[in-house]
Amino acid sequence: MRNLAGVGILSFVGAALALGGSVTSQAQANKFTVHPASTAQVITVTVTDLVRTKKGKDAEVVIAQAAGFPNDTCDVITTFDVVKMYEERQTWSNVRERVDIVVNGTKYPAKFRDIGFYPLGLNLACVDFESPYLHSELKIPVLPLEDDSDTVPGLAYDDKELASSHPGTPFLNKAGEISSVLTGTNQGKLEFASAEEIRAFLKLAADVSPWPSLYRRPLAAT
View 1 (cartoon, rainbow, N blue to C red):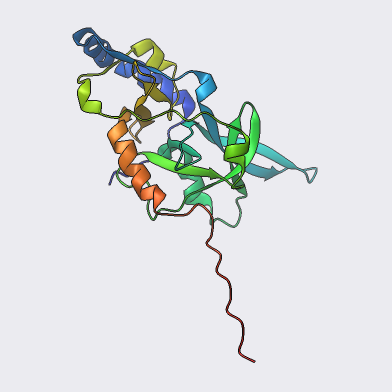
View 2 (cartoon, rainbow, N blue to C red):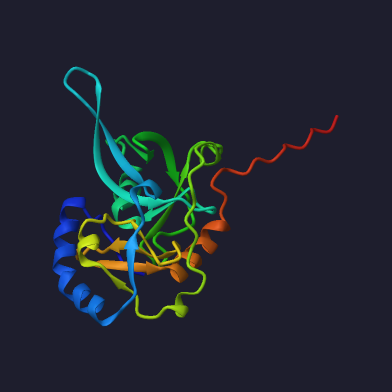
């Protein structure tokens, strides 16, 4: 397992530019280039600190954010390196924080799905709305995963679009399917989780319910 730390949005652009040379050469050697999904199909996951001001009021400070995309298994799949800060600090008594899924500028309370250990070999995280009904009520379109990544070998990425994309952004093939998701590492390098890797991650997430299971207490004998 890789030990991943948070990747800031500002440092991300510099890392993308540093990667530009290898991406450009790769694009020249391949005819098929994948592109990021449109912003209409990408939502945002934010981690917010609640800070008490001198006037006794709470001020909200966003300490991490990442792009994400909806899925039938997880309400949102995002990159774990950005939200890892929340998991590390959630037991700190002097820190009050929350996770939100932001859709069209509106924040909705969210939570991480506990599947044992993140990132399970991948830099991905499963985030769900706190409400079990919001996903269907918001009618968020779900991007399909690429059926067979081996059918189109040697995918390339456009370096300009890569530099302007945030971690968690899905990249689409010609059929409009997610072929990979942009992630980051604690060294500032950019990586991609393939559709096959995302599918393996979803199999693990599907075995865990996003909400507690309720059991009817047996009636006491009279």
